[in-house]
Amino acid sequence: MLITNEFEVAAPIDKVWRFFDDIPHVAACLPGTELTDDLGGDKYQGRVSIRMGPVRLRFTGTADIAERDEAGKRIVVNAAGADERGRGQAAMTVTATLARSRTGTKVGVAQDLQISGAAAQYGRGMISDVSSVLMRDFSANMQDRIARIERGESPEQIAAASAAPAKGFTLGLRAALMALSRVFRRFFVPYQAAS
Image (cartoon, rainbow, N blue to C red):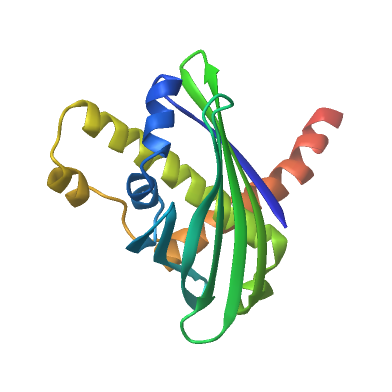
């Protein structure tokens, strides 16, 4: 399934591109993500923990940078992992593209996701909503981290303020609210327009 998101960062494109070049900084911005080892050659080992409703998933696996196009400001990352309890597998290709905007940099993220097992039971809508919530958190964390680097904070100070884990209840609730707002717009906006 293909999931796309866009967000803006209030920083110049070259600064955001340099930030994307530091994978540990990028990973620290995504709630529930932890790099456990730098395997060299743009390949990393790590964990991703997430709760969707009553199901808690913890994937361990690897991610590697498949393509880095500095001129086009485009980076492609392949990731694959398996749930530690054997309840499913996931593979994903993430493509991030940067473009100048009036306020700084527009970041487009396309995730081509294949998932099996417990997480697959939630379907495309819920997975897409959870992904959107995670991207919102990621963009806020990235903006904060770039600002902290600019202020000259130490790596320890930055690490202390790093992203919190993706909490199940709040993540699920935020995704459910997104779904409800879509339903509300479908039912009530056409009704108001007809009035």
